[in-house]
Length: 433
Image 1 (cartoon, rainbow, N blue to C red):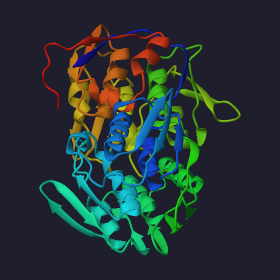
Image 2: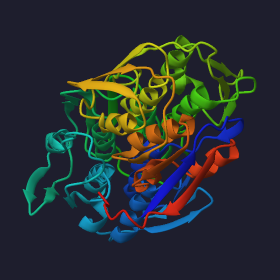
Image 3: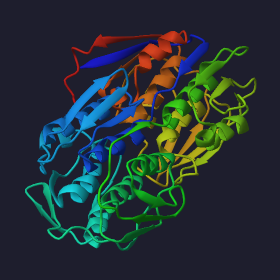
């Protein structure tokens, strides 16, 4: 185990390159199973979640080579239809293997997945969708055993869940439907950029997909798919995290420049920062932005929502910013109402946050102080790093494996911006949850 030691109070300056999207990479890597021809995917971030997915693909029998952010995959005939519990348990996104395995082999055995502990995230919508395409589902011994001996057949399926459309559910259904007989119509589809990126990848493979990015996606099944090259979109959550870092601790004159971003994907995040008084200036192409902290920052209100609303994956980071913003701010998470475990840890640093029924009310304080804290999930860990950058003194952030799930070289990038951060062995912490 490792911990991150942060000496707070250092102003950030310079530029940072944003990595490819972790959340887009995972289903795209899984979708490589849909063909036996070579696939080459560029800008795959080197994070533990993508490494786990690559390990699963290799365990299934695919040939996988990784070099400098590019992954080459070839999945010959005869790959296994049974995934290993030891790999799948490490991340919830392994559920996105369901669609491509069923499309290609018409059967699969998948252990129920793991991942962050941030509230209930059931797989029932995924199973309901694959059943609608004609598959039979059994759950036995912690495994999902799914079969469609006669292949999958297109139909119309509504993918709305209790808290809105499901991103991975939409991904799974798209991947399953591309080789199904007939036409599949996904109603209440997720509109996230990561869904559109997967659709574009599948189209490059020869799939016939219409409407990605809207609430209705139509997939016309084809006989086979072929190999292709694809470059993953920028990670909008990593970009948002660095925008918040710049708003909290950026050099007041020069700010921090973020490169390799997509303005269209960042609008709701950058608009909120501007409303709170901070400066966000994009270049003409929308691929770069300079963020400067406000002279007189103002509080704000967040209500998370499916895209193009405010993303649940960015509420913890903004909570850290609001903790040091004068006045009252409110954060309501309608997607994962239990996703506020970071607030207790921020409280150890001096933040004034009250959480009740999926809503956090933050009273800004003048300063935070360094303290030993523990990350509970991926985005909570990012919030603690942001708070530590601004805090007085030293902060030790334990359970660093959460950060490594979704941020590529986060500490190295912060060092390049002038932060004082370093990794160290966490010899006194045996809690690996």
